[in-house]
Length: 173
Image 1 (cartoon, rainbow, N blue to C red):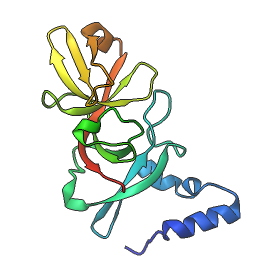
Image 2 (cartoon, helix red, strand yellow; image 1 turned 135 degrees about the vertical axis):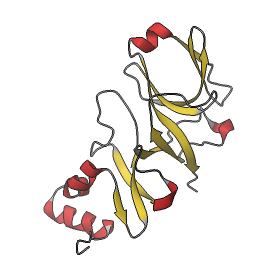
Image 3 (cartoon, rainbow, N blue to C red; image 1 turned 180 degrees about the horizontal axis):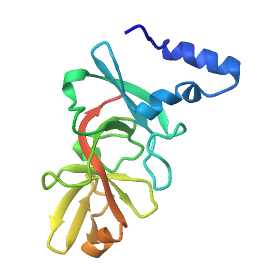
């Protein structure tokens, strides 16, 4: 083993002295996306998912959550946390400030799953997703946000892109 990363707080102090961001000092860690430390997996937390901004771009990663190694299937897919910035999924107990664990995938497992979906050039949103004969419906969990319908043509033109599936919610008090 022999290699050990310093604590994040120490990295931040070093970065301040050097006049660089702590993300810059950790660049290799961001490229690897996950670091397994003593039975835990270090999963990045992102502030937004938007077309044209790499998901794990330094300015987009705002921190990390540690998940027990056995809780995620690291062989088949990738994971990240999304910090919720809106109220549109409150009735699903997903509130502004919470962190949602997203499993990257581009397909729907079950009708009504909560998925992270990017629409056009806009920031991605969390919605329940339903397949219809003519396309898909994205349904919020808040009365102030109406359902959004997309045709199969919209989907084929990449106007609607499924980023991943919500797996769990971490509540931040």
